[in-house]
Length: 303
Image (cartoon, rainbow, N blue to C red; front, side, top):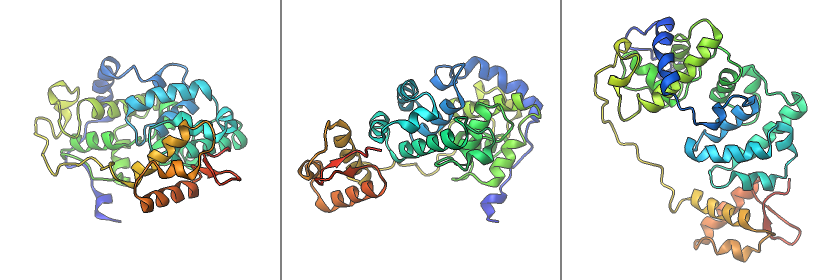
């Protein structure tokens, strides 16, 4: 086992009962209630879609796409039957469109093998395309109310600081999952609310750049309370301009907006460097994101 996997909180942690007592009233008063997938009546499928959309996209950008997506394809069967070109167009400019393909593949499996019902067991959920440990736990907890550790970057940071460390590592480990689960009350319904409240605390108060301890409901039980967040190495935003991602995005944007298949000359016009463009087009074809018709023109996949 690697050293990072053995990392543990540096100091004592609050009991699950005390954490729930302090954290849940704060969450009820301060939690973001404008997220559309938190509305009453949201299905397990809606929660799953929201989690996949939010994986590499800011919540503010994902929310309107999620609403349009769920209005058009409210069930797995609806998405499974949709033309793939329509799915990619509805995905729009959120980036990483392979997520849209995985969601449609996931919808087909749920519709055909699970009777249209999203599984509640994280183990079953992880067998679906594009669903990892975090997303599986999120669906099992946020919709079904299960008692599982839901650990994203925000939760890892909060748990680390509660134990006296300034931050967690760069990737989720088994130790992170164990530490988060140890904070959950025994009652599943309460544990589910604590899970989402921990995430909200990390998103709103206990952020990577600043810990607003004065407003934190558990500051007197936190081993990091009152300390200054170390500056550390600045986290540079991933470069986009001039990259393969930008070229792929331009090709996808052209085909999303086209009403019919386009000639190669129009593809060539989106980027001046032929080698980069050829590489991007080859990747998009290999990933099933674009296709060619019998005349060799380019289009979004028809299925």
